Figure (tube, helix red, strand yellow):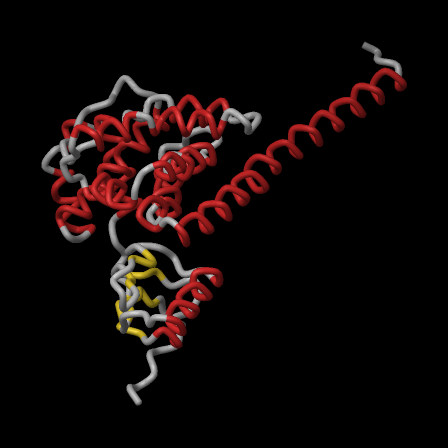
Length: 280
């Protein structure tokens, strides 16, 4: 002090440029990258519902929990959750379904699952600036996945969030509903730290939407499917809990035109959505 005007002006210009750079990177990561991975996951869910049907829902849950826990850059937990399903592409559909349902695996199936983390690592190694995501995924022991609840307090917060979200998903499959799954986890709540369990309960407790049986023609984007959707040949098309997108609707309509889709479809209908048409 006193500071020459030229020096002060140059310092301010440099600070503004640095702020713009940091802001642009933040937008790139939080919006462009996350949006791209969501879009990729939606497409994969259409062709591999056993592996990816729950990926978007789990990602939304993971980010919601992370935000409640005030995790820095909560987007990375959502991305890690969605990318954790990438390894499922190497699994046969029946093995992926058993894994999601928390069923016991045979020795050969466990061997397949043990190679999933390496597949995930190879995929994300091509994506720059995902150090936080890779750290979270490095703690995911899919080879040991089972219905049993295991404590993991030594893991990073993001990894513990993914663990409890995956535990909830498997419990939903075995217990039959989110309410029953939460009750099951509550009986094992000592395996989770208190803040994590409370954040999960707050983020994932069902908000009683109206569930309606709808004909395919009445299903709208934004609704959430309350049950699995199958073709009349028995093929699983969409898993329960998946949010309806325009691409998903197109897939269902195409299958309905070719082989038929079993209806009506149970959908969570928010206030403001059109009611189901009366049967003709």
